[in-house]
Length: 333
Image (cartoon, rainbow, N blue to C red):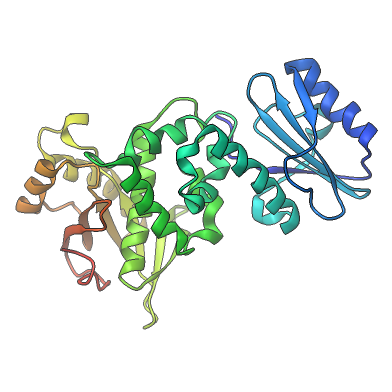
């Protein structure tokens, strides 16, 4: 599986002739490509080329007398193989901004339905234009409503656009976006589980908490979030997302909730030995399945726990088990 888009940094002096000989010609010889001026003005102090590959791939290269930056969802030319990779926030801002303008324009040309959701498009850009996952990740939002059952695509996109525009996850954009994966195979289970983390983050933010993703703990695991409050409390939060009964062997909605939570509690949370709030995101459940869970309120084998279902209209229903060290009364219906 290819990874999300990252820059390759090539130190040293580059010229137009060197770029043609060492970057464009190998790419053209192997796959067939066209070299052209970029669509947008290159960063100050850099020249740039855009490479459109015959198979639909795209690459960008900008260079100066001191270094060059490569970004692409195609094969990397051999002279760049041993170069170091960097995320969008790790390269000069002018280089990152230019590359993102180029890529967003391409994204909106290929998938115009995303143009109305600029922050969501920016946030997931490293996977929306990744080598292997650029179509599956977009399909997940376009045709599978990001895991929400019986929902309108535009309502779902507007829901996540509104949350992401708050900027609370911007600093962790590449970590969070990459969890969607970059596989040519559409893995609805994994992708929906990823959105469970975004749903939980929204729930915590709406309740007044700051969230910090991917907290390393002494067991060698990473816990999904730390929730910080003005009062100084910093409880840890782990998220799991059960499949609805019609997509798993569990016979009832409550069994689906219990079985999924058991996998988490018997493994990661057992190793941590307490101190973590388990959030069970049932947002994949249709109305009838969720009503059965809400009526029965099954235990999930771990306390404290929050079992909830979020809808793209912003309404969240749920219940708690044990003494949850979070004030969620204002956000749980």
